[in-house]
Image (tube, rainbow, N blue to C red; front, side):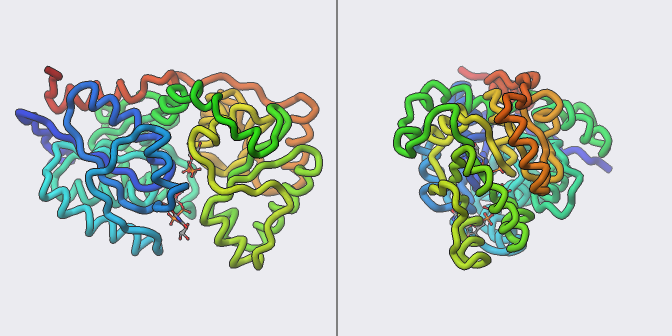
Length: 375
Ligand code: UD1
Ligand code: UDP
C-alpha cells in the first residue's frame, strides 16, 4: 500500500496551474512569474468561478497575469453544481495535457475540484496556502481546505500554525514546506504602483481619515437579521469616520434579495481593482473585514484590522500582526473602533517569511522534485 504518488522526473516537466476566484489571481501571479523565469513550462486554467470584469479580468490586467490557456466557464451555482462542473470540465484538459503536477491555491470550490480531478488521474497536486484551519466546518472553505490538503503531495504553508495543523492531521513532514505567503509577494511587488492610484481623489477620501470595509462570508451576508445588525453598527461608525465599502457581488445580491435593495448608509462602491484596493487599504485609518486575504494584507501593511468573524484560519495575523477578531457583537465592534480612534489600535509586526519571496521558494521545491533545470 502507498499513500504517495510516484513523482515522475520527465525529460521536460510541465505544470498546470488553476485559478478561479478573485483571491486566487493574486496568488497565482507570482508563481507563474517564477515558473517563467525558470523556463518551467506551464498552462493556466481559469475555472470561470468568478467572471465579472471587476472580479476576474481586471486582476489579469492589473497584475500582468498571462491570458489563461483554457477558461472552463463554470460560473455560479450551488456548491455541488459548481464543484462538479469544475471536476467534469477540467478532467479532459488534464487527460489531454498530462501535466507533471497541478498547482492550486487557496480554499475556494475551484481549488478542491481541481485537486480532486488531478489526483484521480495520478497527477500530483501542489497546494499553495495549505494547513490553514478555522476549526469551523460550517464554513465552506474549511471543507475545501481539509479535503485539498488530504490529497495534495506538496503542501506549501504560509504560517507556523499551518505546519502544526498538518502534523496533527498526520501529514508526513517531508511533504510540508513553510514558504511564506504568495499573496504578500504580490502586495510587495505592487505597493509602489498602488501608491500612484488616484482612488482616494476619485472617492473623495483623505489618507488616514477613513475606514475600508469588505464583507462577503455567507455567515455574515446570507442571513437578513445578521446583515441588518452589522449594517447598523457600520452606519454608526460611518457617522464618526467615513466607511468605504466595495461591495462583493454575493453581498450585492443579498442587499437586493434580503434587504429589498436598501443599501447601508455608508459609502458603497463597486468591487475595486487590485491597485486601487491596495491603495485604499494602505492609507486607511483601519480595515473592517471578513476576508481571509484582507486580514493578511492589512497585517503586511501594518494597518489595524478588525475581523468581523468568530474565528480565523490565519492566527498569525492576530498573534503577530495587526488583526483583532471582533465577531458580530455590535458593542464589541463599537468598543474596538473607539480604541482605534483614541489612538490605541493594535500595532503588529510582519510575520516570518512574508518577505516577497514565497513563490521563489515554491518554485525551488517543484523544480527540484520534478528534476527541472533551467537552460
Ligand atoms: C467565493 C469563495 C470564497 C471566497 C470568495 C472570494 C467558495 C465556496 N467561496 O465566494 O471562499 O472568499 O469567492 O471573493 O468557493 N457572482 C457574480 N459575479 C461573479 C462571481 C460571483 O455576480 O463574477 C455572484 C453570483 O450571484 C454568485 C455569488 O456571487 O452566486 C457567489 O459566488 P461564488 O463564487 O459561488 O461564491 P463567493 O461568495 O464569491
Ligand atoms: N480585493 C480587491 N478589491 C476589492 C476587495 C478585495 O482587489 O474590492 C482583493 C484583496 O486585496 C485581496 C483579495 O481581493 O487581495 C481578497 O479576496 P476576497 O476578499 O474576495 O477573498 P478571500 O480572501 O476572503 O477568500
